[in-house]
Image 1: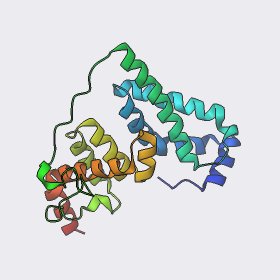
Image 2: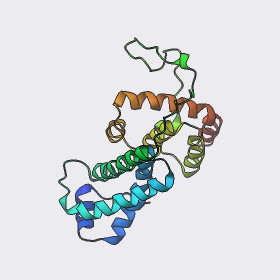
Image 3: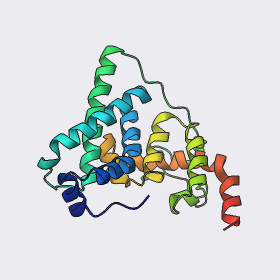
Image 4: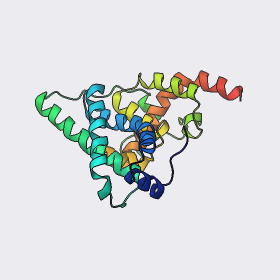
Length: 210
């Protein structure tokens, strides 16, 4: 898929009613929006409703976009706010406790509470670099990674997908999900470590064939 034009050109085209451009934007941004919505709500079906509602809100309010942020960030913020409201309604309707996430990596690989960098890797226990953190993923790599993501606890899967599949920056994820950048980095460390253990053979083989 061709990249989208810069924000000024993109906004001008959308305001002019360019339907093809709007369709490209929807295709490009909806997968990450679905992840953002799914973080806050209890099912994929509800998340899909949120994304549809978000795009309707974007159409309605686009002329009032004040350009205080990137257009993508503004759209993602609309989606996140709507998802948060849906999630809050679900929580009031079905008050259930959130179970703790089971550990996906041995806790002794991380610095203990009380240290300056608590929650980060022990110097001798940090994993080696992992291709998907720095390289563009092929379609096959994305498929394998997506399958592995299903084995992670929901929050970890959403955050690592937003960062490594959809390309959101750590600070952007933190802002949209109501977390601190430090929390996002710690979750990414642990999620990526768990994925490495599952994907090591695949990516070593893929790198070896390049």
